[in-house]
Amino acid sequence: MPNFYSDTQTRPTAEMRATVLEAEVGDEQMAGDPTTTRLEHRVAKLLGKEAALFLPSGTMCNEIAIKVHVDPGDEVIAHWSSHIIGYESGGPAALSGAMIHPLDGPHGIFTGEQVARAIRPQSRYMPPSRLVSIEQTANLGGGAIWPLDVIDQVAEVAHEAGLVTHMDGARLLNAVVATGIPAARMAEGMDSVWIDLTKGLGAGVGAVIAGSQDFIERAWRWKQQWGGAMRQSGILAAMGLYALDHHVDRMADDHARAARIGAALAGMAQVESVLPVETNIVIFRMAPDGPGSAELIETAREAEVLISPRDERTCRIVTHLDVDDDDVDDLLEVMASALDRAVGA
Image: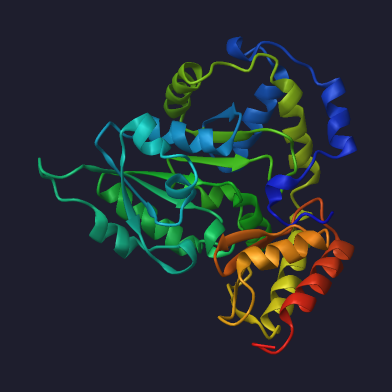
C-alpha cells in the first residue's frame, strides 16, 4: 500500500539492517559505545558544533534543548505552527515551565523584525524572553525552506538581545539537498540544532542534537533524568551512520516526486490551492464544493493509498524512501478520480 502519510513511515532497508549485525557496541553511559560515538562526532561536524548527543527522538531533542536553555517562567518565541507548540503534548510547559510566544508568518517562517517586536522589555510583570526556535524545513508550511539570510537575521536579533537560538532540524537535510547550502552554514547562528534519522534518512529510531560542549553536558543530565542511557545504542546508531552514507543525496528524488504531485494537484478542478512545494511535503486544500479531508482520505484508503489530514478541508502528502514513481502514479490516479471533475458535479 503506497504510504504517503508521512516520511516517518519509512522502514530500514535490508542493507541498513545488515549494519546492525556488524555494529561494534559498548555501554553508552560510560561513553563506551564506539558506534554511537562515531555517529555523534559525525553529526557534530556536519552541523558545525563542538559536540552532539544521540537521543531516541526528535521530540526529545526539542524538549531537552528547551530545558537546557530556559528557566521556568521564561518565554520561547516560535512560529504558531511549529512542532513544539502543536505536537509535543504541551512538553515545554509540563517539562520546562516555559511560556510560548507564537509568531505568524507565511509558510511557517517569521523574520528578525518580528522577533525584535516580540522580545519582552525587562519587567517583573512579564516573562523574560529567552529562546527563539525555528523549524527547518517548516512542516506545516509545506516543507518550506527558511532562507539563509532570514535565519541569519533571526539569530542576529536574538543574540544581540541576549537570547539563545534553537533549530528543530527534523528535515534540515532536505533543505540542504534542495539548496546546496551546507548544514553547518544553516546552523551557524544556532546555539542548538538537531537532525532526525527516521524521516528522509530512513533509519528506524533516533535523532542527534548538537551544540557546545557545555550544552551537550547539560543535555546529558536531562537525558539521564528523563530516561537514562540506552546502553548498547550502537545497534541503533549503526543505522544512522548508514543513512548518512547512503540516504542523503537521494532526497532529491523525494523532492522531484513531491513537485510532480503538487503540480498535478494544482491542475485538478476540486483543488482550491496547493502550498509551494520546495522539498518533500505537499499540502493542498479542497474547494468548498469538493470532498472534505475525511472523505478524500477514506477514498484513497479504499484504493490502498494512504495520505494524512491537516484540517477539515486540507490534506498532506509526503514523499520518502519507501515510495517510488509507480506509487506516485497510483496516488495521482486516485486523486484525479476524486478531485479532477467539475466542482459540484
